[in-house]
Image 1 (tube, rainbow, N blue to C red):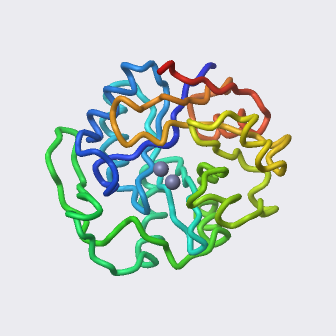
Image 2: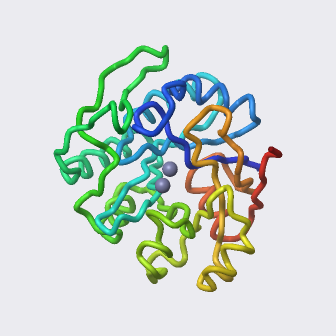
Image 3: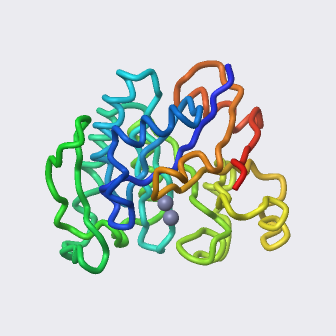
Length: 246
Ligand SMILES: [Zn+2]
Ligand SMILES: [Zn+2]
């Protein structure tokens, strides 16, 4: 089956995410843009994913609970969990590794957990836009232990990326799908970083505003509408990447 997926979306819980990005609003916008599967990937948190998954289930949209982890190397890693309970187990292991620095909302932005009816559940006081004291390998191992999958995020970008920040493609991540930023043509990424040649390159929106959801999407030919089936398709090369005009 054809699954149009955007697996990198920020919500109100990311300090850099717009306050219009409630779980309900994200799901409705994703449906309006014709997506079949999305992942909420806030910085170092999964909490709004629970609400988006519940609302998505009521609206027929597959919502993956995820996180854009920032590792101790300052690299962004999309961590995608197969169920809300797996995401909760993963998050319990991650949160103690986030520095206890308080968020300054006036500077970084608000970090708000919002339920399916757009009510504010709570405000996250700890700054999420920070590096965990866990390495790439340690975060990846935790994701895998919880039954999930990783996609190194925007691997060619100048900041928080495998290739520009870390400077190389670690063997244990080379076989993963690798995300190229929505704004970078694949040919340009490969020209800049020859290590990307022959890899499984995907793209997502990295949306922080509703209008940006699905601006890049990866369309998989998968055997089911599950995270595992989508990853199987990714590793087998059964997908194409599409961009929305404008
Ligand atoms: Zn990022
Ligand atoms: Zn992001």
